[in-house]
Amino acid sequence: FSWETVQKEKPDMIHLLDFPYNGETPSKALMEGKLTDNKYHFVRNHGGVPDIDEDAFELEIGGLVNTPVKLTMKELKDASRFPQKEVTVTLQCSGTRRIEQIQEYPGDGDELINAPWGEGAIGTAVYRGVPLKKVLKHACGGLKPEARHLEFIGADTYFKKGHVFNYAVSAPWRKVRNQGGEEVLLAWEMNGKPLPKIHGFPLRVIVTGMIGARSTKWLYKINALAEPSLAPVQSQEYLYYTSQIGKQNVKYSNGFSIQNMPVSSAIIFPKDKEVIIHDGHIELSGWAYSGGGNWPERVEVSPDGGHVWYQVDQADMTEKHYHAWRIWKISVPVDAEGWIEFCARTWDSSNNTEPTFVRSAWNWDLHVTSSCHRIKLYSMN
Ligand code: MTE
Ligand code: MO
Image 1 (spheres, rainbow, N blue to C red):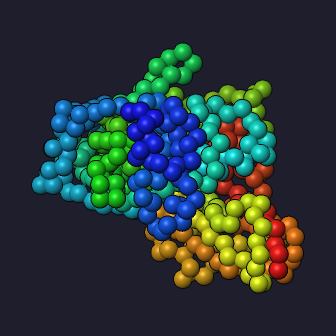
Image 2 (cartoon, helix red, strand yellow):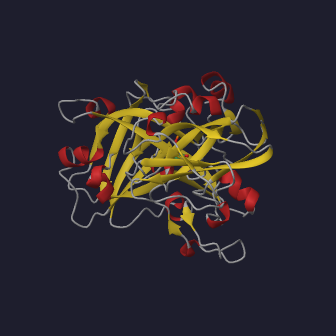
Image 3 (cartoon, helix red, strand yellow):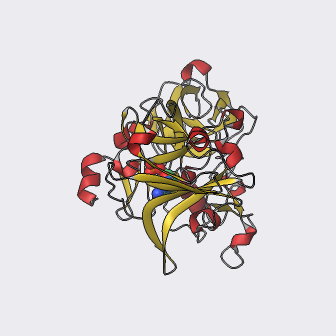
């Protein structure tokens, strides 16, 4: 899978890294509507893109299951065996808006590629596949009683500290069991098309509401475990540290595993530092998302750095959904001339909102930037 292919299939991405390929969705494509075109969906890779022959491929399920099995894609897609489902899901990388943390205080970070993501490491698609719990039930006869976590292993490999690892993470069994409307899907279709190679062809897991990292691409093995996966992506990356922790005193055991995405928002248009000539109102648009089955309930925008807030009209937001973002727009009255600071914050259905300043969200590994998103505009009235 070459750089030329990326340029052909994803021509207008904001390319962050050539290898492993990492690319961010351009702003215009983010605001196109509820669904993100596959062509522009962000890409986050730890290693290369494996070449998998769908006909020879088998998904292996083992560990603490009653009957270990191997399933071909044909067997998985057999609707008489496993009921299929389509789910609209926003995937968000926990590195989204990391650039603001870097600007606040550049930590070292441990993530393999601590890419300076902006607001485009997020995207929404309709995925088709089978609920993992049905496959575990019908093909494996269920889990052994001590099973608590499902490990998802990808066919791609990467180097870390002199070792080669397969990409692997895990999610709790209670999530897979679909409590509170959660969904964990084995997916082969994205927006009505076969899963693109760069997004995990032929099979990936989609874990709704959790950080994007749990949705393993090129999934070829599932293990039922008593404890979370010990693989480095699960046990060393994607940990959250208190603000007391820095390069000098960091230990993995001081961090906790980031599970669901917190509530967050972004102003996509206008762009930071733009000059806006207007007649008393400035139009803004952006996205709002929250993980863990919460939906963005209310978006507010402030034209004075966070003192006065204007609420986005529900009619100016895309519909509510458990597992997807909402795209919003608002027209804010502005009298002031010169540089002014706009910020946006979202309230989700559990009444969570974002801290006012990014310094409250700063953490050594620079994950989950949940804080009011700020831009400066030059207002000419
Ligand atoms: N799965 C494999 N096998 N390898 C990876 O590097 N990256 C993860 C996840 N699944 C990754 C993976 C991360 S960190 C994110 S945010 C999402 O995939 C991104 O999915 P996308 O590239 O389809 O947007
Ligand atoms: Mo990610």
